[in-house]
Length: 153
Image (cartoon, rainbow, N blue to C red; front, side, top):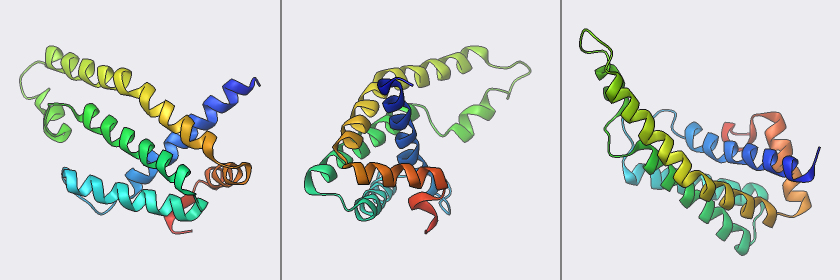
């Protein structure tokens, strides 16, 4: 496998770790997240990753940048619309599926991913590339175990 393909796959997998961590930390929370709730979870996840990988200051700065990009992506993805648990059922309130509204929702989500996705990938690549070989190995091992940082092990 070509090196750039391998790096891209590892990078995307690493993004899944961070996003998975934010998602895993959401267990036990119900309803929409406030900005304060998101900031609290972000801080906890960054602290846990920092401890687990024993990051130096430069690496932690890159992790902070990655976390900021993920939060920005989340905000852009949610968009101006309301709670998806309200928006999606609204599509079937009438006697016909609201195709126009559904397409508008899809367009907004797609634009958010296309607009912010490259920034998230760049921040993830910068963070991963800043890790030592041993730290990268630890990330891969955590991924292989699928339990990683977020299940208390």
